[in-house]
Image 1: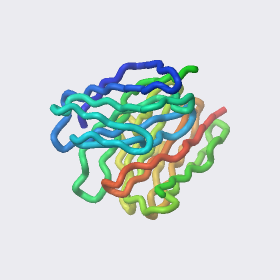
Image 2 (image 1 turned 135 degrees about the vertical axis):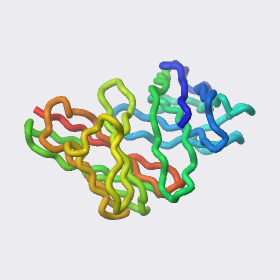
Image 3 (image 1 turned 180 degrees about the vertical axis):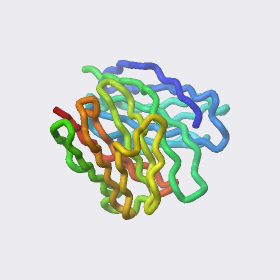
Image 4 (image 1 turned 90 degrees about the vertical axis):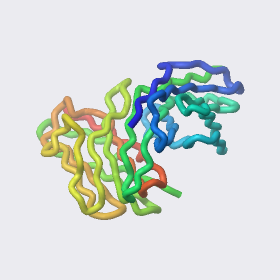
Length: 114
Length: 114
C-alpha cells in the first residue's frame, strides 16, 4: 500500500474549520483514501473514505486532488471533542472477499482550543 | 451498526502468565480480523491478520508462538499473550471487517505486566 505523509501536529480554534492535509504521491489507481481518528486511549474511529471524488458525510468532508496525490480532511466546525490523532491511510480494495490490511502512519495530532 | 466489542478493557497480570483478549463483532460477520499493538505516543502497529477458519498471518517480527490468535467463528477472535513479560505491556486493539465493507475497531485492551 502507498505511504502517506501528514504533518505531526496542528491547532485549530473551536468553531473554525480544521483542514488536515495528507500526501500520498505514490497512490495507485485502485487504492482508496481512508481517514480514521483516535481519541486518547480508545480504538480508532472511522471518519470517511474515497477513491477519486470528493466525499461528505455527517462528520467531515474529504477533498481529493485531481491527480489523487494528496487529499484534505475537513472538519467544518471543530469542537473540543475533535481533539485526536487523525490518520490518513491508503489501501487497495480487495477482490478476494477478505479485507486487505490497514497500515497506520504517524498521523496528525489535532488540538482544538477555546 | 458495525459494533466491535473488545474485552477486557484493562488487565494486569504477573510476569510469566498468559492473558487472553477477546474481540467480538456484535452485529455483523467478520471475515477478517486484525490485531494491533500500540505503545505510548506511537502509532498502531499491525501484529497479525486472521481470516475465519484459517491460520493467522503474522507481520514480520511478531512471534506467532507468543501471540496466539484464534478466529474460530465469524464473530469472535482471540489474542492470547503467552508467558507475558513487562515489555509486552501495551495497548492492544482489534479490528473487524467484512471484506470491502470497512473496518470497525474495538475499544482496546490496556495490558500491564508486573
